Image 1 (cartoon, helix red, strand yellow):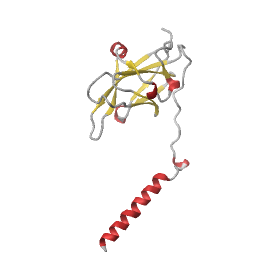
Image 2: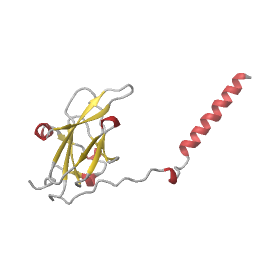
Image 3: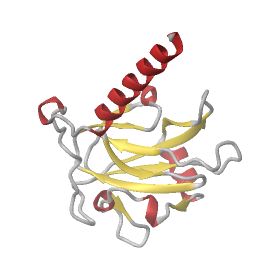
Image 4: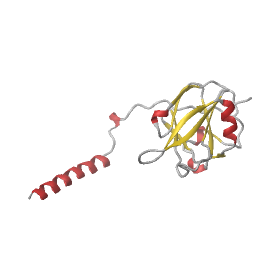
Length: 170
């Protein structure tokens, strides 16, 4: 009899959990939208360039951590890959899967910023940790990486391709 009661309780609990997962989200409970990073016109000097790269390493080579700018997913950076993101000059917060390594930058027009993604080991899986790098070091390391694949570009309107003009006039 006791087994039937335990089984019944588990069945009711799991059914309630399933119903909660399948229920449509309550629109009043959703967080307010943060302003998205705006795209500047191509080749203009009023944009800031954020260069994000991940050096080629054996550890975590199969993972591709996501890059977020102002809580908006931009791309997934694989092993030995790079991406340039065009941003409006303003205060932005960049993060990856590891929320504790968020970087806040007040970007300026015509400036280049370099962020390296380092793969950190975790209990269940690895995650990307962001590190702000000096432009002298970042520019050299960035050039050694390959551009990210098309299927890893999430917000393509903010991503500057390698064949396009630079983010800003030098």
